[in-house]
Amino acid sequence: MTDDAGKPRRLRSAAWFDAPGREGINHRSWLKNQGYPDDAFEGRPVIGICNTYSDLTPCNGHLRALADHVKRGVWEAGGFPLEFPVTSLGESLMRPTTMMYRNLASMDVEETIRANPLDGVVLLVGCDKTTPALLMGAASCDLPTIVLSAGGMLNGKYQGRDVGSGTMLWQLGDQLKTGAITDAEARATESCMSRSTGTCMTMGTASTMASLCEAMGVALPDNGAIPAVDSRRARLAHLTGRRAVGLVKEDVRLSRILTREAFENAVVANAAIGGSTNAPVHLLALAGRLGVPHALADWDRLGRDVPCLVNLVPSGQYLMEDFFYAGGVPAVLRELGPRLHKGALTVTGKSLWQNVAEAPCWNREVIFPLDLPFKPQGGIAVLAGNLAPGGAVLKPSAATPALMKHRGPAVVFEDIADYDARIDDPALDVTPESVLVLKNAGPRGYPGFPEVGLLSLPKKLLERGCKDMVRLSDARMSGTAGGTIVVHVAPEAAAGGPLALVENGDVIELDVEARKLHLDVSDEELARRRARWTPRPDHEPRGYLKLYVDHVLQADRGADFDFLVGKSGARVFRGNH
Ligand code: FES
Image 1: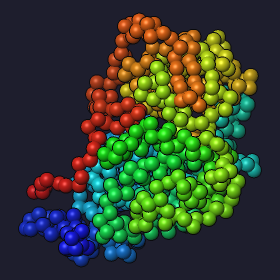
Image 2: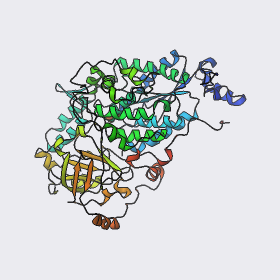
Image 3: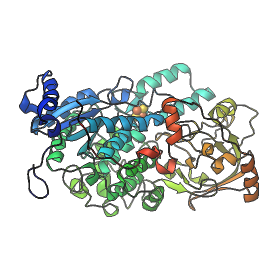
């Protein structure tokens, strides 16, 4: 290994293993208790395998097995693998929301990487927040880094038809509410929905982030769509281990991959795959760690006229297994060629375009061509107006076209408890033309910025066949959810944003084409309301929750902590004895 001047380059791990005297003895001796001879780690790139395996994160339940395949690749390429656990975030079990812990997990990752004799890192990720959390932590250290995703579950199958996780969950909830199905039927469906280990097999947030890792060049081709239990995922793990060593030898740090061009490619790719509204939140936070100029407005500017090419739930019909068999992310990127920064460097050592230029498509019902797209509007619409000075987002491909230009009276819920208590009240004054408004569900207000923005419709309207309404909040929504739903309103109500001032009956205007979200109330009246408004007391005066509420940024800045923006690099200032 040499540096740019052609001189021999010393590995970072050598600062531990070549340390003089007592320090070096200490570092080497305890590794030997694992049976490693000196030449296993001295002079070899040490590759940390950062694993989010946890029994509490079922989506990532197979990551220990995948880690073994990564290790084979690392050994084969002349590296020394060391696997370590980090905080895992399981979407299906954690309360009140995994999002509250994304930044905590990223701190765990950052500090563990920096504190240990690692030269490069493989990030084993899967369930929604594990991908951004690990990338954010790794970005703050900026070592050579490569991602391996868990892969999606096999397609759900129920009574001869496909059922998509997440999306089916929301439908089952509504069907149970109206009595359209029994508890027994719901139980049978839930068993059929989760047929294997792996992440949600819809184009939810996990699949979106796995696919965008490919588009950003931080994972190997096909990382996004190979099913979790397909042997090709294990082979990808092996190849990932090999490339981790190559990245160290070539000194390709994460910041050389995650450039402004990479983020812009991700925005375009997210539009084409009908990706999650959570993607901008995570990528804004990640760009903030790296100091890459990237703003919420970029999502509209770059994604606005990119059509949706992929016919996947929740925007369409098929599931991730079908996506992989149709050609997966490489086939989509090939279609997007003219829209991409083709020369962006990837972890293969080649450009993005070199990776995908020959990628085949095997099924045009699943992946459509750019000139004959699945839906004309992909992307994330970034809305602005007096109701959301910092912006708000909506996913056009999952919305009802007839509702994308709409004026209606607000039905306001002050918080999620208020919503739960009244949404199914037969006396609730609501019609299909109403706009459901939820306050105090943002980063500080809930707290934790949960995925409650879907807002299941009032029972009495569901029973009358109503399928969608305009809904609006400072919360997020699941990437598996669909509907005409405005989320991430910034600033949030709890931070004194105009959302806090909305009252029942106020007319709200949504015009997605004009990117407008307007509260039809005069400035004078809003000023009067603001004079009367008082912030709610914080939920918890101590511990992590206090740290979170005191330091979390708003949605338009990725909801990172203010003190984590920027990166510190991997330097450690002192030894330990
Ligand atoms: Fe883990 Fe959906 S619950 S990816």
